[in-house]
Structure formats: C-alpha cells, structure tokens
Image (cartoon, rainbow, N blue to C red; front, side):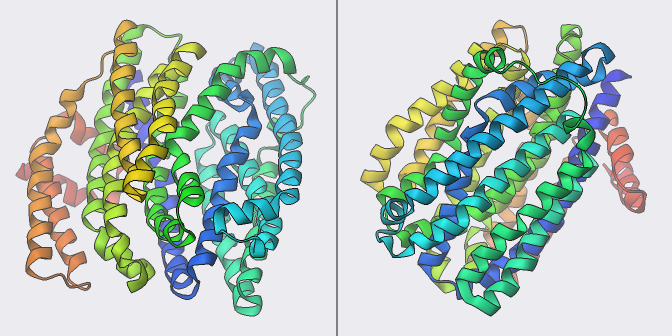
Length: 497
C-alpha cells in the first residue's frame, strides 16, 4: 500500500508541475518566436549572458542549500526536529542573500570586461549593469522554490513558476515595444522581483519563526563536498554556453542559445520528475532497503516511459522547431538541437542515478560521482570545441554522461540498490515504429504544416503499441492519475490491448 501511495504521489506531484510548465512553455514559445525574429544576434547573445550569469550566481548557496534539501524533508515531518529544519532554511536565505549582493556588485564593476569577452566589444557593458540584478533575483526565486519543495508544496510551486514566466514576458515585451531592447532587459529584471515577493510571502511561516538559525560553520563544513559537487555539476550542465561565449562568436552563441531554449523546456520536465523522486527517496532512507528498491524500480519505469519519447520527439522535430522558432536565420542550427536532445536522454539517466546516490546521505560519494562527470567535461570540452566547434561541447557532455552512468551504477550496487535497465525494453518497438513514421513522412514531404500531423500519427502508434506492453498494475495507476474525461479512452485501450 505504501508503495502504491509513493507511486501515486510521485506522478501526481510531477504532473502538477509539468502541467504548469507545459502551459508556460506554450506561452514562452510564442513570445520568443516573436523576439528571436526581431532581435539581432548580438541582442540574443545578451539574453544568453543573462542565463550564464544566473548559472554562475548559483554558487552563492555554498552547499548550504543542498544540506537543507537533504535534511529538511524528514525533519519537517518529525515534530522534535522541526526547529532544526527552520534553522537550516533561515541560514540558507541569509547566506545566499549576502553573497548574491557582493556577486552582483562585482559583476557591475567588471561589466566592460565581461562584455568584451562574450560580445567581443565593451560597447554593451551597460546591458550587464541591467541584467545582473535580474539574474540574482532568479536564483533567489529558485532557492525559495527549493524551500517549498522540501515542504512538498508542489501546487504552490507550479502556480508561481507559471506566474513568474508569464509576468516576465508580459512586462518585458511591452517595454521592448516602447524602449527597444533596453526596455526589454529592464522589464525582465523588474518582473523578477514579483515572484520572489509572492512565493516568499506564501511560505513565510518557514522563513519567519522563532527558531534559531542553524550554525554556519558546522553546516558549511558538512556542505563543502556538496558545494564542490555543485561546481562539478556546473561542468556538465552549464559550462556549454560559457565556453561557446568565450571561445566562439556571438552569432554562434545566439544560435546555440535558441536551440538550448528547447532543451531548457525538456530539462524542466526532467527536473520536476527528478525533484519529486529525490524528496520521496530522502523520506525513505530510514526505511527498510526493500522499500527504496521497490520505489526506485517504479520511479525508473514511469520516468523513462515519459522522458525518452519526449527527447526523441525533440530530436526528430529539430529542423521544424528551429525554423518555426527563429526563422530562416536559425534553420541551420537544427543539428545542434537534434544532438542536444539525444544528449538529454543520457542526462536523464545520470539525473535519476544521482538522486539515489544523493539519498544515501554520503557527501563524499555524491562528490565522487559528480567529480567524475564534471572533471572530464572541464578537461575535454574546451579541447573538443577548439577542434570541432560548437558540436565539441555536446560530444563532451555525451561522453561525460556515459562515464557517470557507469560510476553511479557501480556505487549503487555496492549499497545493494539495483538499477532495472530491463524496464526500458517496453519502449523499443513503440519507439521504432513511431520514429519510422515521422522519418518517412519528413522524407516524402518536408512541409512545415504537415510535420505536426506526422507526429500526431506517430503518437497514436506509440500509445497503442505501448498499451499492449503495460501490465494490470500500470493500467490501475493510469486510471488513478489521469483525468476522468479521458477514462473512456483508457478503458478502450485496456480492452483492446
């Protein structure tokens, strides 16, 4: 019964946030489709620098945020440990707020240098002054989301993720129409304040209470391996745009940024599932090993039934997506998006395996895993990008992810946690048939209006074929989590399998 509850909690919580992000992604798709057609390559590269600064500002948590995420879920459920959880939450906010202030100050001081390195001229240093505070507010909002996640407030998170995205573009685009690109980046920065205030107010009981702040030094020492882990994760998750910006041209950075926009949508889906799995895994760490093993098998099965087809769909649709999204000036960037989407399958593998290693509460083990991935990417991606250009970053990530999968699998086996790769076999034939339909259609007629039809037909084939491989427990779970409006369709598939 507990196993079924865990599985239902996992899917329902993830679906709430995926639904929110799905609606936001549609909204952002049309917003960026307009912007990428009217903005120059340099201006799109500046938007990419905003994202680069945001990822660098993530180091402001010093590993304390990771300590909070590890310990607060179980402590918030235990009455005698709630004060400790509140103390960790307060410490996280205080430390990150202080460090973010000084990071923004340093960014503004070195703005001409940053502009000359990424844009090959210091003429755009004024844009760095504007986007730096917006990047800091984005990181602060991410931290508040983490605090809400440890309290399992998924509906609240989904609401504010949606509102944050809509508010940014709803404020920034009118500012662009009035003041041009300068107005756009001012609008983005100003709009970033609202979700921080709104979400912070919603979880104020976690931030403002009489509980004492956790000890800084002790928490910092424990979190140091986790901070190093974050640095290594930057190596295989965020280093790509930074390297392209520093070593290649602003035009290539802009093209890569447009392709990466789709990958960000994909990673948000992966991240929502991964975060829900992580919170549930941490709550099971003190339970018998069999409960963790059962949960890991269920999580892997449903995680990949959704994630792998979506990644392949992005890869196949890359020529269509790049053309529709950015117009003819970005069409030739479709191989970048196609390879990046395939790479995300490997990334999703390492994400789920990392969660189980993380749940063991052994900081050194977690550090070793991410070091093995990050160090390889730090060492070889610059070499590959120099020799084969922008594709070198993607191939470097692929190789590092494959290495990490082997390392993580070995670590988990040493703790008697098995990875059931055989669960992936149910996807083989549904994917082969669906991919064949899409490729055949695109070969016969590459028409921007017909391509969505090819994917609709392929989706129907995938669902029908997959339905024949699901067991009764799968169908029972599908009935539990899907809306009642589609129950007749589910029953039809169940009886026709």
